[in-house]
Length: 140
Image (cartoon, rainbow, N blue to C red; front, side, top):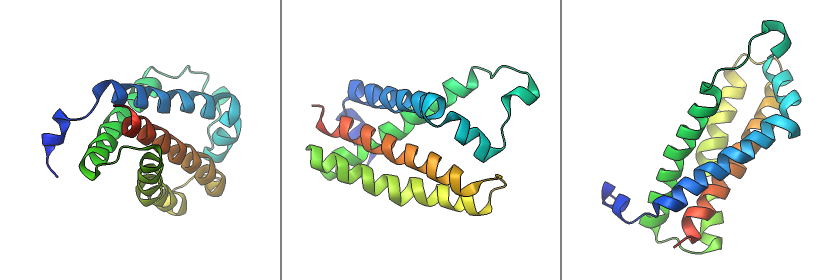
């Protein structure tokens, strides 16, 4: 594999995949699991009294864009082109990298509820990786 595959990827699919991953995160860490996630990390937004900076929105979107480029490169390099291929690629990358790295952080991190943090954060990343992988794999 080389960086030559960057000329063969669908950049619109990459952008849509990254945005979809980001939107799922807005729901996941907002109305769905926001309070539970904050409790698992020890974050109390009322304690600081400060509003979050724009970085909490910009950085994840940029990170998901980079990760989705990597997924598109892997999909192209492996000849993945079907829904099944996209799901398999997403599961392999999501478990093989995302969940294992989050598990290490859960074990050695300093969060007050590492198990809850791992379940909430890990599940989100796995779903996001699979979603982005499917988008870049099936979109011609």
